[in-house]
Length: 438
Image (cartoon, rainbow, N blue to C red; front, side, top):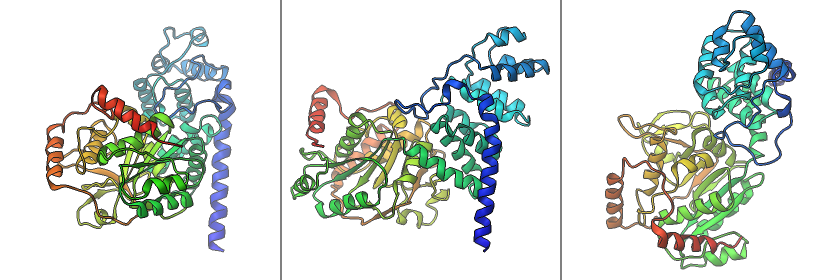
């Protein structure tokens, strides 16, 4: 009875929150945005494409602020004229700096939801930057998420995720977070790559687990690094897209999977698994997709890492509050397309096993994605939905030392990497991608 009454209370509270947010909907959302876009999904780091013209309801709201003597409000929106007539004829594009200033001045105002809606409708910046940086009550983010739910699923996702971060145990927010996240992820193109070399049995178990536990549509590719066993034959028999090329080492092989998913399949989120790390529960990819979207990149929190004393600095291991660990493994990594566009691929100068994945992760952090370099490296990680067999690795001590020396040499080099060096290597790499038969 207690559980049933709790669920009833959550449903009532959720319904009340929805009704409260809907009261703003018709008044403040521009008419041209009331239909969900059916073309290419805009990711969280793309600029908003809203019309900069104000709707009648927005003009009324701004005029009310002007009548109250809030001239700074109108100035922050970039109006050249402070007259009512000037407002009615204006077009608005709000900068990130002005948006933050507006919220800071009016955070306690009863019109805060109307104000933030106006900002999000006319933002000339990635809305995720604003949502993740302003200080508002979790209830405000929640109500805004409901408001934008049928208008822009991406914006709604970021709003409810921010509310979840601020109130992780809130039952109403948690329920809405699950619902809105599912709706948003359903619009995304998710890619899963598996890298392998001479471990057909491990690969088979991993691919079978992916097929058994991954819900919804997804792109799958196996990057085989020139195996001498019957890996290729197994992929062909089971209709799995795969490479068929010479052995070039783990960095090259990871880049093959990443490039195929990023450039050929145009996925929004990339998940890269090593063949001894596999899903173990239904809808396992959801937490990985969420974490990749929110933080740009995420790694696997192996049990030997999180159990080691002092290895976990902070976090709960959830997608909205991942562990921050002093150690990192490359057995599973996920990243967003937007982060990939800024960071690029693993550095192709690394040969064979060792250091390549760590350098790639540290490059994400140096470019401002989740993690830190203060005092010691700290890497973001989650463990949800995966289990690892920890198969023997193919490593050469001499090669490992060379890679470590290279990592030290290029440690401050943060520029975006291509998957190759020079035209000859580029042509060779692209021919390997063309070998994939899907």
